[in-house]
Image 1 (cartoon, rainbow, N blue to C red):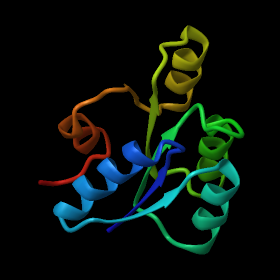
Image 2 (spheres, rainbow, N blue to C red; image 1 turned 45 degrees about the vertical axis):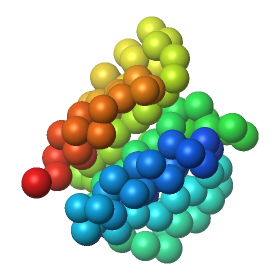
Image 3 (cartoon, one colour; image 1 turned 90 degrees about the vertical axis):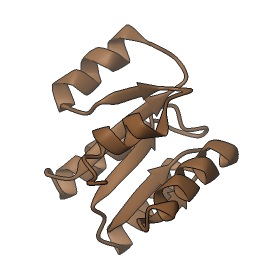
Length: 115
């Protein structure tokens, strides 16, 4: 299993990656939307964790790209801010949102991984 992590905070990205890899799930990290799109195009992923507020661009663009290419992929959005417009948009896309800081067990559940 392979998960793409699109997160511009290196400490958060490393924590998520370590958590997944401790459970023998491979993970790749992108710190920008462009890098996430490039990695998503180059590999087959079973799921993705996408920060909606990436440093240089919108994680929503990454989510839209992923869904366009693979509508059944399990995507979990993350953010440090509860913005009503973002919450509504993610609900329309049927993408769960985890607000930082979140419990790793919640990420596990939202990615629909078997433990």
